Length: 392
Image 1 (tube, rainbow, N blue to C red):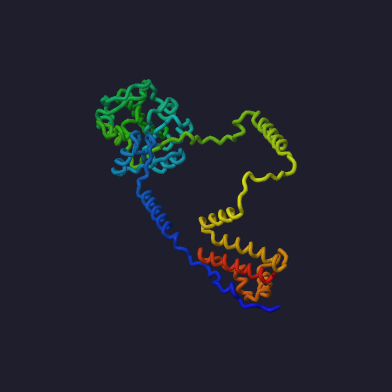
Image 2 (cartoon, rainbow, N blue to C red; image 1 turned 60 degrees about the horizontal axis):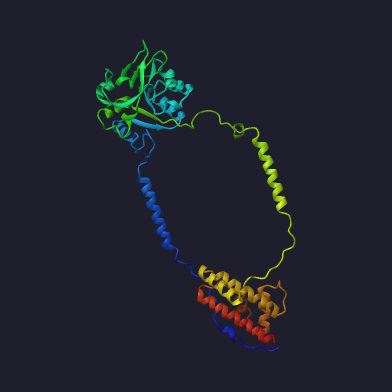
């Protein structure tokens, strides 16, 4: 059989691999710049909160203003949220270290004994009877009273120096014969240290107003708060956590009623039975005609637009080559398992085209751009028409 010179195959073959695209560099640079700015702002922004009575809280009910003034006077303020942390800080500071407890009602008797055993000076905000029994047994509650401006009415150093200040809230009184000083109408009680038991001084405050950001700057509140909390080099600002109970965790099954597990097993069995019942075979599949007829050309155009919108030249090229390879196998009478090399050799023998050029069309690199994809499609079409013309 004579061979003819290559004709339609002289069109340019698909070009080599595309150069790296630089389109992503702009968005990547903008993203990196934004992330850098966010990180810088985060690092430069002071760490604050909005929690009531917290040393880092800027809310009206927070205590950041008093804490910052204390730090400016050389007092080391250590905020703790766990009992273990507060106890360790009190022990590290040694006897005389001031420990402010913002919510005494969350501590049990064992924790009060451990905290009092450190010898720390305790400042308690509105403690209840349980706390008083452990650390200030000579003090008892007398009920609630309005918070208002009051004179000290005592000779204790801190109230006497502060003068008129906001006081009230929970009231207290000293039992007969108990050592201590009652000020501001019972809203401020100071109990001296007890060397016999090792317990440090205890200050009972009925209302937290003097240490809050909202009220610290009014009247004698600031002086009262600074004298109450700044008497030692270290202040442990303890905010008890309701979840920090120290009790062993109860398993979930111990909290649930006894019927929960049998009921869950029954529901699971019923659900499995319903799945098996509803999942029975409904018979063979039945083919149904489509409600509309879609022309093949429209389907091809739709696929082409999807490939173009996604920039998927590689997938489009593979689809073109796979379809051409499938049709060429039939034209050159090869089975469906024949690879691109076998088909290229058979096509080259039949048409006289260079086998390497044919193989490059059937199994070459992906086109670099849309123009190369169009050239590839034209070359594959020309190759197939040439094979058909030789086969007839």
